[in-house]
Length: 217
Ligand SMILES: CC(C)(COP(=O)(O)OP(=O)(O)OC[C@H]1O[C@@H](n2cnc3c(N)ncnc32)[C@H](O)[C@@H]1OP(=O)(O)O)[C@@H](O)C(=O)NCCC(=O)NCCS
Image (cartoon, rainbow, N blue to C red):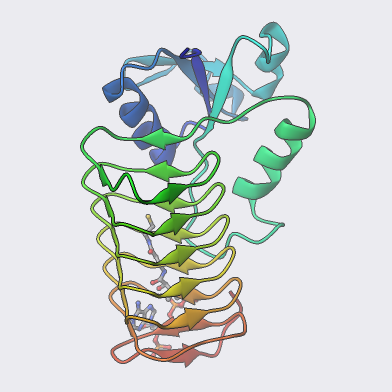
């Protein structure tokens, strides 16, 4: 049974989430956004319903949520994407998995709760995608890859076979992670980087081959 869905957030990532849900035939009621000025505006032909307070008008048993909050950095427990979903789950709300019909997901891959696989993405056999993770537009997650919870593989990034990506990592757009490489929690990989070595601690990696930037994730 498919429930109607409200998308939390009304920014760019939220529109991509809504578009994928609509393409999958899911009924989307609209978006929430904390900015009152946006109330009444529309995105993807759908209304911005108000801030998260409007959820009080709905029954968590009859409506599901989708996380429309995107990220460009590590998704640790303090990130907005994680905090908002965790808070709403503690209030009884359930978040849907999003999988665009134009994504190719092997039946031998494992998709975690409320992960999001966008248009043109490929997830190969024995790959696992953790809770709340995003495999964004056109990204490739190769065979036997493990993406831990809340990871984000940004558009056109490639995670090669057997690689291990720790919780909260952000793999920047167009980056490549070499086969069998392991990344620890909250590693941020810059756009276009080529990561060829393991990185156990949180760090920002950039360049080809990737090196640590002297900054916080
Ligand atoms: C790597 C990244 C996190 C660094 O961001 P930042 O900490 O704000 O760093 P800055 O932009 O101030 O850049 C710091 C230095 O690193 C360099 N740099 C930044 N990103 C780089 C990248 N991807 N590759 C190579 N060098 C990079 C900058 O040129 C700058 O060099 P300088 O000090 O010699 O001038 C960011 O540039 C990035 O790539 N984020 C991922 C974005 C993404 O994936 N977006 C898609 C979301 S769907």
